[in-house]
Length: 257
Image 1 (cartoon, helix red, strand yellow):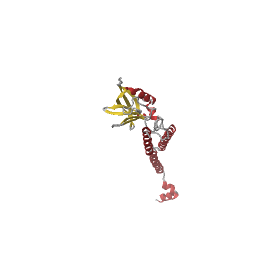
Image 2: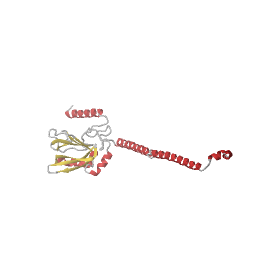
Image 3: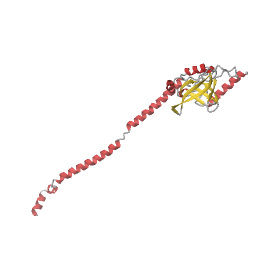
Image 4: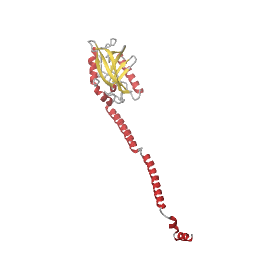
């Protein structure tokens, strides 16, 4: 077995082991369809380079342009910018030999706060490939950021058997299969609507003024009884009840006296 076949065996074995043990996720590999640097590595001239050298401040690292986002490594801190978290990408300090790449992205924990990350000293020969990658995914326009967030629900997508031309695990641009992604999104929206409907029904059934109304009705009933009693007392006060009850006997008693 030659070295090329041996390397492919190691790569396929590693992917198979990771895919089998990482439940609910999938290994994403660099692909020729996404980005390939025109400058090969100095120590491996026969292999394709899927990364570009860049600096984050004073720290040197490599940018990988993947089908689900942009990764920077391998010196800490590591960064991964998924498509749904990227607000926009722009270029600064474009010179004859180098340029800087600015990524404006929001944190998954705080979507309202957008931060800018600058990666500098990128070789100018990589600009056409990076620019094509950015435009193909619509990352240059901040107005498309909301559409990307709404379109993407699962960063690693649903496991499948698709393999790209380079032997890497194939996924769509959204990191998920079209059918599975639409089904997952519809189930999520359905559950959200049911929860909102249930809350609306509970608000309609609950009447905060019912207790006050019942207390008020009791008080008014007591007041009505008191009024009736008072009127009865006033009415009785103008009548001679003894005379009405005894009748002629009362008259005889008065005559004897």
